Image (cartoon, rainbow, N blue to C red; front, side, top):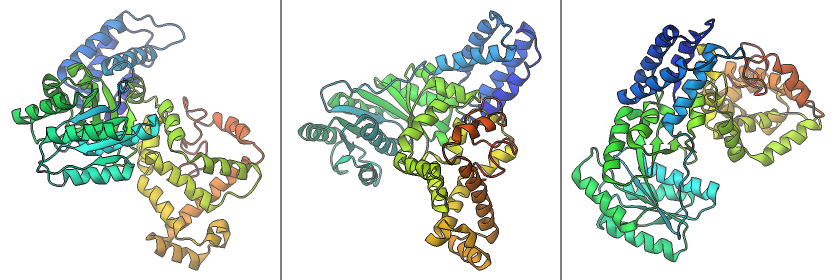
Length: 471
């Protein structure tokens, strides 16, 4: 998400390099470019106008200190205005009431409500230790109820059964009674969507709202619809007392216009981003972190939080002890590292949060490919336990067998073994706790702003070529 804006903002702010101060002339041209970048990202025109005006006023009144360049001052101003535009801080779900707290999901058909219901149930179970029940009031869409049943089973949430013969209000009230009897903390109500906004749909969702009095009424919207998402959110806001927005399919949206428009148009906060198809691909929306990402400064806080949530700490601890004792890093360990990476949203997801990733050459970005990671895992899976432990025995005939077994070419197997050898050498340097020393040596070889991240190969620096991330 925000790939286009990152690229354009990077180019725009380069134009201020070498300027001694911020003036009416250099700000005018820069803001014209910022305006075009926002419009190309499908940000609503009134939002763009207000944003540009606020940045202009602050920039003309800004003093450029000796320690900062005009570009850095403008980045700070733009960053602060982006945060303000998107809502200052993350607004959590307000579940402080007598259980069960009801969350009502509303939105158009195809926006991702049912999938979001499952993701939200998993989020509440894992992050907030809540017991969750889900129910579908969608009696119109074929298989909608079955879809939610499947999603609920996947995330281990309690599913309340319903049928197309029942009325939505009747379903919701029965589910609420069952949630009370079973002592559930949260009831998530998945309402019916329509292909377009109509009076009947709005009346039904209003009746549902009145029947269950939810503490949270979340509007679920597809980010790829751009500023149309903000207009639809406005229509729902006029009909319902919305408390927030869930922006879905952001992993497929390179523009990000919806995220920048919704708060200003509706006055309601974005509470979550759907960042993939998996049931754990739901992130709380933090305006400050998103602004940092847009300006190419990465999102290290989210990256660390994701690692804490998704990394298998037991395996990581075992590997660390193994390396410290000088025991060999083998291909099974290599495969485990690749799988951990995939569980954190894959290479693209990791790269998006890395500081400076937006400034990497295009050919390097293109090499960061999740399909390549899955291919490497398949190759290792096609090896015998002996081959994984002693890769030096993998010669000609074994390489052909492994390639055939993994559906790859012999040169792919050769490439993996080469990458593994380089990573193995690096791991040997960590023997006896030499990790800190190695990182200090690498520090000077990493691009500015990336010291300590240890893994972004700047055209051959840092890790050995191809040795850090699988490329």
